[in-house]
Image (cartoon, rainbow, N blue to C red; front, side, top):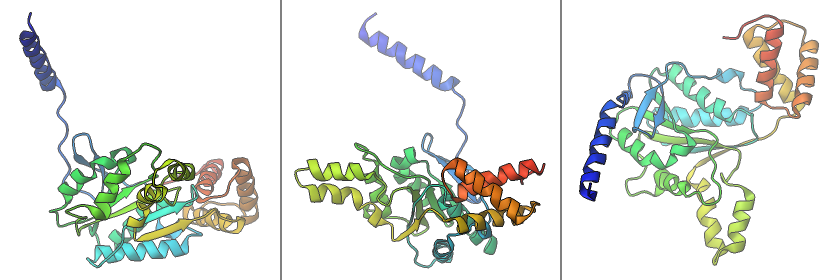
Length: 285
């Protein structure tokens, strides 16, 4: 069998496998739900029927960040100027919870005003395709990427820079981008220092990488909470969920829980509350 015949055989096999493969579901319509997940493989939106989020009132210790992001989100929903937002800082302090809670709060005030589309970190390079899908739509969309960061050799940040501000087409008026990160510049300090030390023009090398965060007009910092704030978060969850027990017992147990975890944060408080509710035989949700 010559090369031409082998090529024809391979093509027929590939075509047969493609016919046998299960059909990918079509992209969900943007008016079919309030939240979606973007799948770069297939370039489609998947509707989320129930968003995993807490109520805005349950987020304690981040009042300033809450008010600022909520105001920005409301203005965007009203068609007024608003900024892309970067929520950065300590783990477990409610960054992603705040994004989802703000979206939920605005949609309760004005049902259907905003669609929330989650974009996974590894799919950042597909953002131009997603924007092409959303550009001509009438619905306003908050794109959300959780735990966004870049490491050495990763060039995906260039795609994000172009999407946020620098591309020829620019960001559509009906789209805004919210991201969370543990790092203010979304890349480790040693990576920035290495660029400065090894580049022919250190200033330009560093500037290209850290300028990504400048594309976000709104920076919101989240920092580790003190004991008073931690107890306020615990109390808020306990009250909202109708959990029993004295406050002294609750705080004592919550403090012991945080010591075993070596940290105090909103996430640690929620994990404690789940344990506390379980001890009382109560279900959450």
